[in-house]
Length: 528
Length: 104
Image (cartoon, rainbow over all chains, first blue to last red; front, side, top):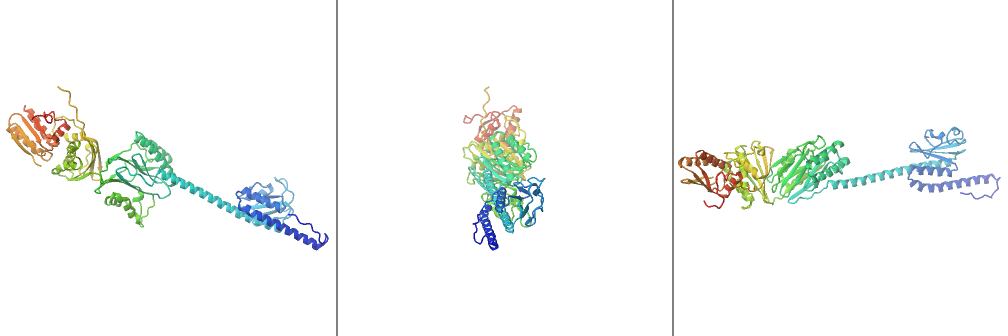
């Protein structure tokens, strides 16, 4: 700012000189105010440390000193002369008089003898030099500048932090959206079934998952939580999708899953069920808690894991268990979050209570009943409940026979209840089922035999359970038809009618799962 | 479950359900008839609504016994369920069962 020429009083008047000096000071002060006025908005908009250094340089120009430097976070922003570089930070605003500090050769950027102004700020300090002395007003102006820099840099840090946080939030939301695309919160009920899903993750994503691919419903649990688990799950879902499209599901799954999981050091449990409209299911359990078959009358069959979790041991083979869901029967799948939930004394919910609940609650209410029972428990893990309930209104028959051959006529009665009188499988089925019941009673010593059955087109789907001694008739020795002998026709009859015949030993009993169909007539041998 | 039979010389008519429960009884009836009546046996099973493999085994036993003695055992008629059983076990030819609907 220019100072108006003074005429009053003349040069020799000491009062006029004093007045002139005062006016100059006022003018300086005015310059400083103008400077601050400009500086404050600039400081507030500070976006980088380089801009802060520019601001310091501007301030130096204003107080008529040519050089300035700024040190922040241990770094000189935009460089500093050699004589200044290693000087410790000042504890308080300091003016070193001319000559107090050696600023000349051999230092880089050497300077003639000069006073040095040093003003600390929170994260470093401001240095100015290049004139013989600094006025008190100048010093205080630069102190103000330092406070302003502190505030501006702090605001900048806060803005950056907020931005980073917002970005993280956005990433997280996007990741969660991706996760929900991989592990949706709702699944579609297959035709003829009611599928209920409760998916309650412990965090935004990761851990338990579930998805559908073609006629498969898959639930699982990836070790770990959060993003790494979510990534592995997405990878897994993709592998599974590819695997179910492959002809050799077994090999494809093993190849796709095990190697990758082993490399990543993660492991994964899995329960997958292939759902056919006629009630025929194929169930795979690899390291997952037991899947429950809940019959319409409340009785339970467990489908236990046939292999440890994928990624722990090399998976040689995946076993598929065949199960028929007859009308009203249900399949219950759940994650460890359910039975590992603890009450306030640390006692777990437990599998016994889970089984009791599964048996007593109507399948359609199981999820809700389980959540109600969990109200006094703390669930710390992911919680997934999936119930697949076959339409109870579909026609089907359940008949419990005593272990007594006098009850054999009931086999035919049960079949005629489920099948039309002219159904092609009716006669062969009565023969086959009678043989199975006779075997269970006579050879297994069964005291009760349960028949559950329903028709599907030309087929009869039958589940026969008995409490007899363990015996797998599907492995019994096969006999030739047409041979004249006095025993061994029973299993032959079953084999000729059974399109599928599966055996499983279940808690305290045998379970046979059969798909029966009238055998094609044997062509007569060529004439004599 | 009842097994009733009436013998008209070489023809034996069986009626009632034949299964694991009364297969032993059937075995006895067939053995007595073989002892009491010389010559061949014609068996009518059109009155048997159901027969299982245990009863079938009894018939096979009787057939083998008679063959050893040079005598024959023929099925001259059978209900649909019995035909189904014979067809499943491919024993219809062994018992010389005429096709369904053929004259007795």
